[in-house]
Amino acid sequence: MIIYENAYFRKLFDGIGVFPLAASRYGITPIWASEVEKAPISITKHHFPNMLHIGDITKINGGKIPPVDVITFGSPCQNLSKIGKREGLAGGGQSNLFYQALRIIEEMRCATNDVYPVIAVWENVMGAFSSNNRMDFKAVLKSFTNTKIPMPASGVWANVGMVRGNNIDVCWRLLDAQYWGRPTLAQRRRRIFLVADFRGDRAREILFKARNLQSFPATCGKDRLSSPSTSGRSSEKTRRNIPIVRPFQERRMRSAAKDKNETGFIGSFGKTGDPFPTLLAGSVNIFSFWYEGKEKEGFIRQLTPLECERLMGLPEASITISLLFII
Image 1 (spheres, rainbow, N blue to C red):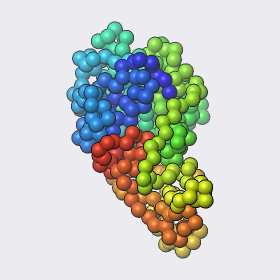
Image 2: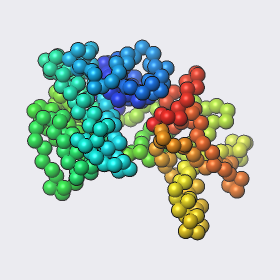
Image 3: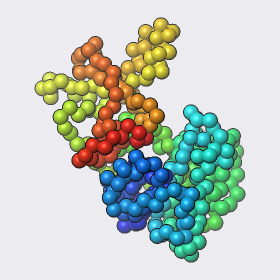
Image 4: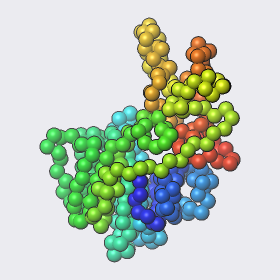
C-alpha cells in the first residue's frame, strides 16, 4: 500500500521493524525509530543499519527531532486486548503510551507550522473497539481530530469507518493477516489500522482504495517447511516427500482429552486451510508436522527462529538471529 511516495518515515514502538520493512519496499525511506527493548532493536539494526534509534518515547520531544512525512505506531495493546486485563487507555500503564505518540506528533506539527507529519498510521488489536465500554476508540478518534466524536447509534464501532475534524481525515479498517500477502502467511491476526491525514484529502484513498500488492516470493531451501497454501501438491508430481504443516491447538487438545472427545482431539492437530495463530513472545510456538500420506507418523515440534522469521514475512538474515521473542 503506497502511503506517500519518496517520503521520510519513522516508527514509534518499533518492535522488530516490520513497518519500516513494508515502507522501504514501496520507496519510503525509514529515518529513525523509537524502541526500548534491546533484542528487537538488534533485529532492526541488522535489517536497517542506517536507521537511527532514539530510545524511550516518553523522553522524545517531537519539536526537536528531524521532521518526517509519515509516522506510524502500534502502541502497546496489553490493556486493550481481549486476553488482557482490559484496563483501557486511561487505566493501563502500557496502552496509555498512545498519548505519548500523539504528543510527539503534535509537537512536531507545532514546530513545523503544521507541515509535518503529513500522515500518521496507528495499528492495534481489535479489542480497542470494545475496551472501556467502547469509550477507548472514541478517545482515539477524538485525539487525532481534536474534535467531539459521537458514539455510533448502534453503540458498536463498525469494522470500517471515517470521521473528519479540523481539516483532518481519519479512516479506520479492520484487517486480518490471513487474507493479505503472497504467499499467504496463513495467520489469523485481526488488527485495526487507522490512517490520519493532516491535510485532509487522502486517508480514504490510502486505506480503502483497492490495489495490487507487491509480491515478495519466499525463498526456498533445504528442509524448508511448506506453507499451508503449497502443502497440497502431491508427492507423485514433485518426486519427493511433501511436508505438511498445520496449526496445533494445545488448549483444545487438552480440553478434548479431558472430555474424552475424540473428534475434538483429532481436530486440535489442524485441518487444511486453518490459519495459524499469532506467534507469541511469552510462550513456545508449536505446530503439527507430518509427511503426505504418513499422518500416523506425524509429530509436534517447536518453530525455529528462522521459521518465525519466514512466517512474519521478513527477509532471511545472512546470520540467523534468535527470534523466539519477536512478536
